[in-house]
Length: 246
Image (cartoon, rainbow, N blue to C red; front, side, top):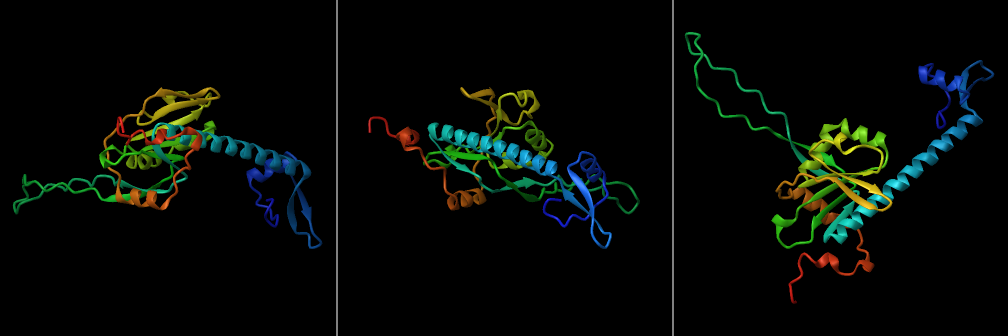
């Protein structure tokens, strides 16, 4: 309504806003009805925007914090990636039994149909790999950060999102602001960390799976810029490839 011409919809939401004094009805010279946001409505919009901005700022601060922790662990971290994730489509139904000329079912076995690959987009808040020269040791990890319970519940209602994360990572974690959920509310395919002022606490470790990164993910990483390393942390990120005594 704030950015529209104000034409009424006459729906239940509009009725509630009018009753709350957040909208008001007006008529022009041609007796055409329009709606206008009241001063109280503007105040409510501003308050909602401030709450959203505060949540966004808190979310981004926690994303940066997790990325730094991955760097301290000797990993290369990215924020805000869009990764093509290969998923398996639903298995094809088995072919019905064949019949011979007499109408009797035969026991001929057909080769199982291969499930086609479909593609989804995974957008983890933090994505990291080990700093290594051995491809099998890359161990990609995806972290999804949530600071509001509503955002977490929205994610959990989308199983295809979880499948996309798991398709591009050997571990997948939810990092939750302390107090918004319990660890048992998150599916067992994810690890769970709680973020508090004192640090990140592992509530449940993530299951580990051996995997090799798909070519599409390597291409995305090659085109993206990893999180800048904090020079104050020294050279700890080289620990994975350092030679003892060298």
